[in-house]
Length: 300
Image (cartoon, rainbow, N blue to C red; front, top):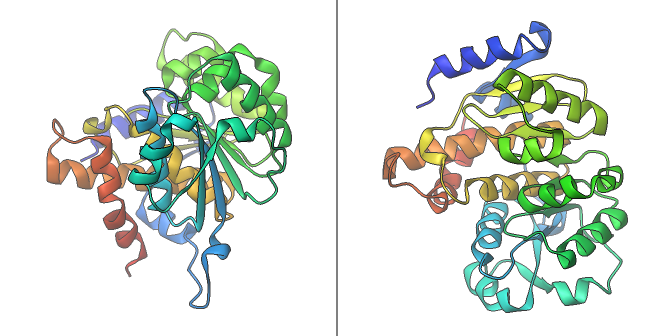
């Protein structure tokens, strides 16, 4: 469903910012070559333990969507850190996940059992969220994926970027990117700022859009070829965060986790659009379509 014109237009615009040889297209063959084969003799401990800090009052749905996408993307274990009032919602909606209350995390300091951390979906931007995000980043020794309000908190507390571990990923939409880097007058300027952000921080930056572009710290840009306008719906970004988190937890590099996640996210969105239509599809439909997307990647 992706219109190739958008891909070509993006390549031309990126070409005004970086050398043509640094612009690549992400397709099925590339992604299949990056996927790891699961060992026959393996158990849940082989596929990582993800920690997801998400959800606030009235925003439990964002945590649910991200958690469900994470579980549908191969992670071995998932612990969701959220406010106590969201406990029952998470336990019922995502029974595979464990729930940790934020009240307990303020006192805890050992994150060593987790292989990746995700933060942001439906989080809120209050002082309590800032305090816990600060604690998580300063204590983390594993890769982190930052989205939504985690990025908004960082935009208001820039020093936090210094504590983001290497091998991490940011997933801003244009508005969140603008809060981090300042407003842009056009798409080319926005892309240049995303590249500067990746280079300055050493963090992979996924700029969500049509198409989505992933920028690595060396300035290379990767244009995704899946996805459609039906994905411009509430919660779609939360789903992407869950997928990235699952892959980081399984030991994929930041680059490979980002490229695979964006492609699979868009592929599942295309499947959802074919079934539900561009108008009627929701972010939950993207999650429902994830198994078919993964199956397609695994088949010869």
